[in-house]
Image (cartoon, rainbow, N blue to C red):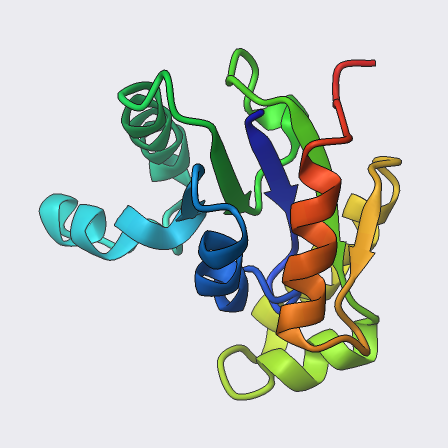
Length: 158
């Protein structure tokens, strides 16, 4: 089954790549950001900073995923299900953490309005009603174990 793991910045998505690959050896496990730097170099601007480029980046990631049609995947990312209509997604899980933990985790990478936006993203994602894995007080291995066990049991089609 294909799985979509939504998480605001600081929730632990990037740290989960290797632990999830170990627990889900038959899955393609991808971080949404995996092509951002080379794509940004190609177009001459930062994908992350230029929201006008996001629809094109969405299309690129979807095209990559569609090349692995027979391989189940796990995509760890920041776009809500409504922002990705027509994507081949089965299980939907929210990876979350407490707001103060998010601020601590992101404190060295983000500041000001970017940090505030990450916290607000986390709050808005909680309103989506998705099953949640909370990384606030778990190790990354515990989070990976919980996510791996959930992926086969959830379906985001309501």
